[in-house]
Structures are given as structure tokens and as C-alpha cells.
Length: 104
Image 1 (cartoon, rainbow, N blue to C red):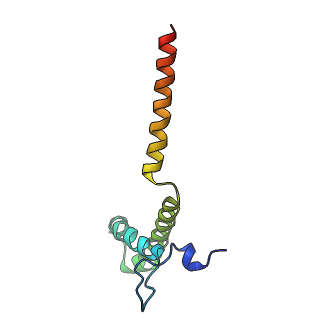
Image 2 (image 1 turned 180 degrees about the vertical axis):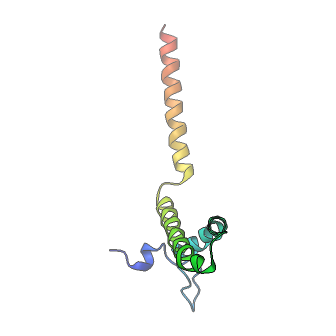
Image 3 (image 1 turned 90 degrees about the vertical axis):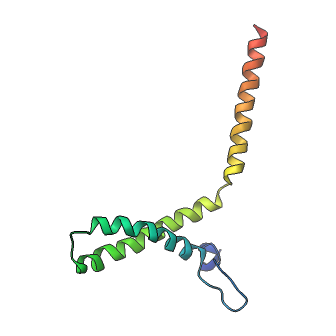
């Protein structure tokens, strides 16, 4: 079973003296930067109390949801691998079509 550090993607900026934040924390921070603008627009007409009690906790939670999705995507085959499989599939289809066309 993976420990919490491994589940969180490992360390984002490790050094010899400090483990730093996890990759999950880093991804959440990046997501939060973008989401903050959207949340501010949604809570524009609300009070500071509404912002602190509703928006901030929701923003933090959604940021980690995005981070978790990024970690899942990171564990999948790379774009290059998926693209290679797609190209191979398309080439096979074209070859099959060409074989079929030459038999007629």
C-alpha cells in the first residue's frame, strides 16, 4: 500500500534538507489560482462573511479535486503513447481499405 506521500504524487520540490510540498499540493495551488477569479465573480455581490464561510472552503475543496484529477491523468499513458496507438490504428484501417480496394 502506498504511503500518503506517494498517493499525493511524491514531493514537488524536494531538497536535501526539506521534503517540500507534495505534488498534489502544488497542483491544487495552481488550480486555485485560476479558480479564484471564477469564485470572486460568483461572490461579487456577497459579503466578506459569505466569501470566508462559503467561497474559500469550496475553493480549497475544488482545487484539490482538480489536483486529484491531474494526478490520475499523470498516471495514464502519455499523450505520445496514446497518439502512437491512434496512428497505428488509423494506418491499419487505411491498409485494410487499400487491400479491399485492390481486390475489386
